[in-house]
Length: 178
Image 1: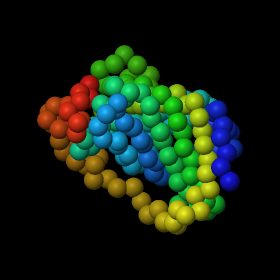
Image 2 (image 1 turned 120 degrees about the vertical axis):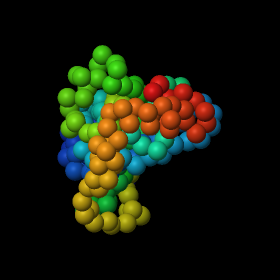
Image 3 (image 1 turned 30 degrees about the vertical axis):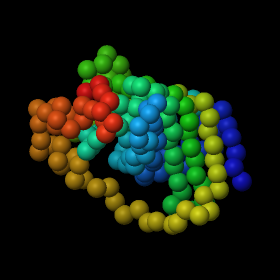
Image 4 (image 1 turned 45 degrees about the vertical axis):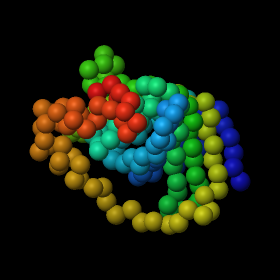
């Protein structure tokens, strides 16, 4: 049923790029484990060993705090239609923020989403597929636009203030680099 690879096989690229949602798991050396759903047009395969995803402003910023402390990250995709499958990408992540010199180069792969605060690059050391036969079917309806609208209304200065007020430390009190 399940298979392991040391890189993303070409045959799985189509599956990954067709997904409308993915889940990111991170943890510091102690404290809470974070699993966060991600959507929008925010995921890119760079090569068979590297993926990037654009992180927009949210209510928390756990992933950033965890990656600063412990670079381990897992990204999971689930087939909610068609043939069942769960796909996990394991590796070590690096974070790029808007003030970093690499931001311009990394951000060119993504749409200009309001409230974009980080780009995470995952250097993959294991790809694992599993059956996913217990994952239910769901129908994709559409993207939500509330977060983009919220960020547009806040504007650049409002977003930066929100980051200082709500995104500077994790639930465990760890710095996020904002």
